[in-house]
Amino acid sequence: MEGEVSDLVTFGDIPAAIDGTFYRVMCDPFVPPDPNNVPLDGDGNVSAFRILNGHVDMKIKYIETERYKLERSANKALFGLYRNPFTHHPCVRSAVDSTANTNLVYWANRLLALKESALPYEIDPDTLETLRYDPFGSQIKAKTFTAHPKIDPYTSELVVFGYEAKGLATKDIVIYSLDKDGKKHDEQWIESPWCAFIHDCVITPNWIVLVLWPFEAKLERLKAGKHHWAWNYDLPATFIAVPRRKSTQLPAGWKQGEYRVYSWKNCMTIHTGGAWEGKDGMVYFESSRVHDNAFPFFPPEDGKMPAPDAKADFVRWEIDLNQPSGSTVSDPQVILDVPSEFPRIDERFMTGDHEFVLLNVFIPDRSDGGKNIFHGLNGLAMHSHKSNQTRWFYAGDDSLVQEPIFIPRTSSAPEGDGWVICMVEQRAANGCHLVIIDTKEFEKPIAIVQLPLHVKAQVHGNWVDASLLSRKASLVRTITKPVISNQGALMPLV
Ligand SMILES: [Fe+2]
Image (cartoon, rainbow, N blue to C red; front, side, top):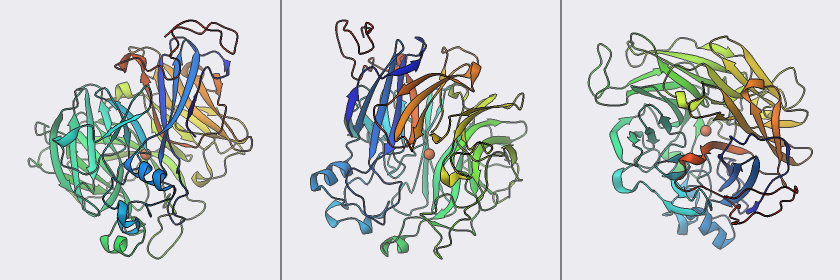
């Protein structure tokens, strides 16, 4: 589906102060995929919701990656398994193998469509047209760029890493930052203890901690036409702590250029929340945790499936940088003892002390959504570290809730003061709607925006305030004079 719809039907009132665009990306294969492929590998399809003067316009468009164009032209799948070129049609093996389907991040006046297996695609924030591959050019030799770069709001840097950065199944990791003009700084290369799945990271003012999942890639297995990743129950969840800069003040005993590897037990720390530095070489960060393999489509080589009732929660890790590389970290503190995913914070406070975390959760005393992470999440939580209070939003029967995105009330509003926007899917009704919640009354939405069609689940999304866009993204509302809308009111001029 591609298209645009103006002035979506809205129940409730959207505050006029909300002025910007919610960009989200879905995994949406344009042609029927290889039947053995995994659900992570569909083409990236962007949905953008421009909110202005209480009205919402919507646009949906595929990211025209090289892969999408080749397969659309052939009208069939040419790429085989996820990140396995040995399973691709020989005529596409030199093409960029990216679906750009994981995240959309606005940085250096560019809207980046990201997939961790390759470099970014840049798309137009207004028309959603695909502009180019690798918008930061030859500054970086790496072949990959994480889908979860982190913005340091205090230094105006986008902190980036890439793994398998020198090619398929390599252990090379690149780390650098991009300033607000897109210029590269502080490039460094390190080596992973094994070729691990490194989906997310955290940053503090001085450190980046990479979060490794216990999957392993092996070239021999790829050549045999099998999956890129195999879970390994013998590998621990692992964290690599790296100073962000040469000027980082190192704890006693650290040498210049050193990085340290810490680990816990076998588990999957899927996504990270906030991180901060404590006294005397302590770094704290939070993540979701599944006590098993949350991606059963990448089983271990012996085919063992994860426990159907695998426990999941949201935890705080403590890394003591005074400990030598190879140390085991202590058991994390459980912050929320419910299945939790997609933690997000008020990102104006990224790297520093912060009070709130927003989470997509399964509320266990509600009947819908299933009983564990494999069956979907039915609500949101907003947790205060200060008061230890958790507020819940339950979306109603037969409703699955997607990643919560925070919108500050103003650029200088106190932390957590603003709105949360998220997509809610009602499977039985085959419908979707956007929900907007005021954090002052988290339990009840202030507006529900009805989509005219069912859209696929979001992988990730972000809010981009209108003031940040180099030209005001208007999406479909490009009218130049007032017209009567379908709700009988004058539509605002843009
Ligand atoms: Fe992610």
